[in-house]
Length: 400
Image 1 (spheres, rainbow, N blue to C red):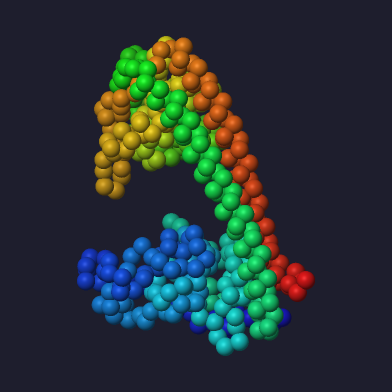
Image 2: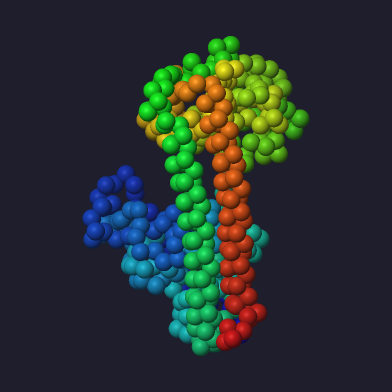
């Protein structure tokens, strides 16, 4: 096994993007040429289809020639080190480098050799706003290159072993999706009993404490302050995220002007921008914290069960209403007035408590199962990476 730089064993090809303001450079016709972005290659090992296609005029404007099926693609921006191969003739954008093996180099092996380097790429990254590599750095990456027969043996071994790991990941991913679907079905059944039992439909605002109406928070929270007040942003409203260690803090001077949006026990937070519709119950560790303008605080009336209201707001019936109220082109959101008008079927207080307790218990159980599945998927992916690294470096007897 010999060492070599990537540029010594392969030809590297840059990509490009036709002018987006010229409609003649783009096409939706099937005879257009696929144009690959990192998004197109991020969830597949072989790229057959792309979200956009380029016309012949668009290709000519770049001076590029579509590469053949089998060409290796390597991402250099943001999600660096992703490796895929073309399953069709295509071109790609400037965030991707095309790699064509030279004579005596197996394309499948070379793709795995590049995969094996991904954990070590941190030392090469250059960043202004995001992590980047450039073609010169990629071209000088050092690879192990055995003779061609051994390359094929390693590639065949890894094809079989990674396919088994990928199949297991797929099964675990499907299992998690089915868990989510089952929980949603259960929630919708419990919460939609009102259709048969004639529960009155009331706007969300009438379920809230009138002394603490639905309210967004701090408009300009300023920089993060170590000893400041905990702050919940739109992107923080999601499972497992509402813990002090993961949140930003704003200065006490800024926060003092927004006492009306401070969080109390039994409150809920609803993302009105950045994951619109996500809703969580405020944990005790965040009592006294505040929110930004991307979050709405919802304070239930004393006779409204907060766990029931949490699941009611997550229900398909309410989420579809919220989705229809979203406005904005680049920054999408729902305004407070529309949020207050969300219509919710309201059972009697004793039924609320029963439904809230039942769905709370089910959600907790499903969350534990989901966390276990995530851990298994992470371990499988670690196993996959370790297999590739060991096989390419000669640490595995692929013949056995």
